[in-house]
Length: 436
Ligand SMILES: NC(=O)c1ccc[n+]([C@@H]2O[C@H](COP(=O)([O-])OP(=O)(O)OC[C@H]3O[C@@H](n4cnc5c(N)ncnc54)[C@H](O)[C@@H]3O)[C@@H](O)[C@H]2O)c1
Image (cartoon, rainbow, N blue to C red; front, side, top):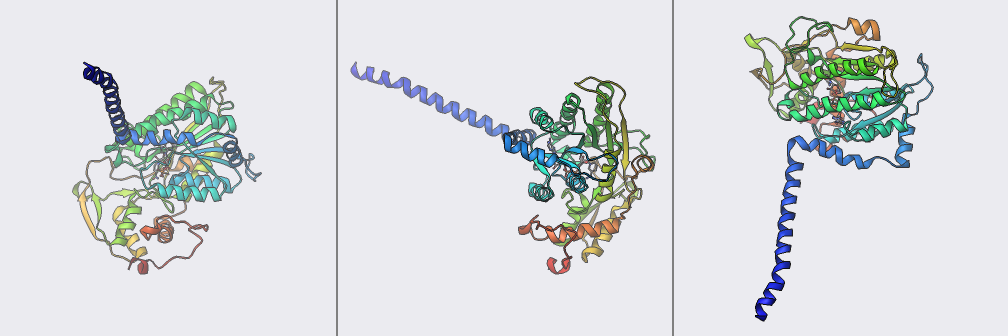
């Protein structure tokens, strides 16, 4: 009897602790599955980063970065929030704006779509140029509202997006997260800001999809996207129309055509071809039906930057306030291309000459993964209204890229170990020697 009492007294705590243990294992399993599912990985990382912002020191850094210098432009200095600032185009645009005297604050979630150490190296470059990059997600309304509380931005240069055509088949939700939900969130915050900023944002040449009329003009049809990426950019253009129409936001969409250059994206062909050719690894060149060549209107980064600055400088003011429209506002869309498409096989020949290495080529039929056969921009509209005039041919632009690559990316161990000097300033290393 005494024994049974004893057993009874101790069975309850034992049962409870067993239950607690199983609950803990169950919760741990759910957390593990949540954070390791591909669709949630980006949003989790960016949400986790939101704790990094706020506080008096942070606000001072934001304000300092947003402060402009007087410059010779026609209308004083701008105060620009650049989303996707640690990205390829965002870095160049931010440095150019700051360099001419505008105030710039960057925003980026440093996601892992490609090597984040490249984004961190760009962040260091931005820091040296006086641009503070806030770590956070464009879907974080609290953060965006806070930024507008701290700085009355005159302009938003919205470049943050999930880029890349092929990756959309692997991680479709990341496109919806950044290119649709993120864009809507940015526009929601801009609409309720007082004063409302003017917005310039990156659409893409991929909206032309299966359009076969060349060169691609802004008036051509864009209702046949060939990839989910293209569909989200096209959706972005329609969303922009809505926010312009209802809330009086001044919005300019820029359709970039295959941008390349120093600090570029490792997921793009010119970048990984360079890497693979130097490693002696075979590269795959795709061709269309009946051996048709794939061609792109490759556009050098400095030309794109000039187009972005031209769009910011000519952007009309938003007309709404407190979320209410007061009159019609500007809504524009421009092609920013180079107007001279080059075959991918020609791109490879230029790289072979610059790298002094013969590429091992594999030619395969283009898979149905969202890529289109060719792109070719008509830029007369941007020329007329933004003063856009691309001046860099592919040979010249690739030479600058290869020089940057040789300094910063050649040895895996030195990956993106950027020194204080800019890539263009230092002398070219002997690539063939490094390769050996
Ligand atoms: N590079 C091109 O050839 C090209 C062509 C057409 C259009 N575009 C568009 O231009 C813009 C810039 O492209 P890029 O080549 O610099 O790409 P990128 O990937 O280098 O830059 C985008 C940046 O946005 C950030 N970002 C992504 N989602 C975010 C989010 N939810 N919150 C905060 N930051 C986020 C990323 O970390 C990245 O640093 C993109 O909108 C892209 O779709 C680029």
